Image (cartoon, rainbow, N blue to C red):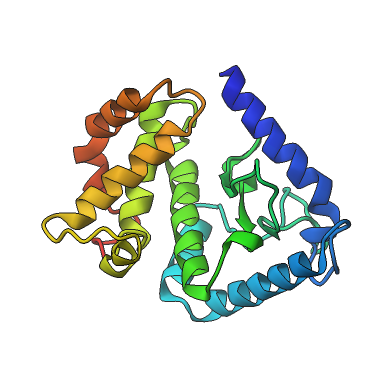
Length: 232
């Protein structure tokens, strides 16, 4: 618990350090950003805006998050103004910050969660689309099922679903990763990526634990395609 809490605290503190200038729309550069960081952030902001208008997957997830009172496009806080911090944070990340979904703080509603998009690690609009979709599935699980991210079974289930449903395991992505199998390649990808993610959880002690937990929840979680009707 302490290790996980420390990780969350570090992530939150770093976000808070840049949140005032960076999360407000059209606010200008973040202090200490290099020219390359600014260019990367502005590029990803443009991709994000394009995807929110044109991507069926991203628009679908935004809609279904809003249906369970977790609209990712509204500001944080119950009475937030239009200038309040937004929930999709785009920034160049330091080496010890991986980005991804950030659960809401203890005692706060799941609608106050957020997603950190590391602009210096996103290399195309398609990459951003898959990343946003993956993290929004985590957010949907967080809002719908009240996930305890310290519970490895909860974490494993959401990782299986996010890898399977987001497009992260589509055949073309696997080819780019040099995974060339055909028989049940989608399942193998979802399992492999879920194990890697669970292994990075501070509550997971070793590789064997990550594999066991993913296998324990596999059948129920892989076949749960909500909010989709099926795997696309």
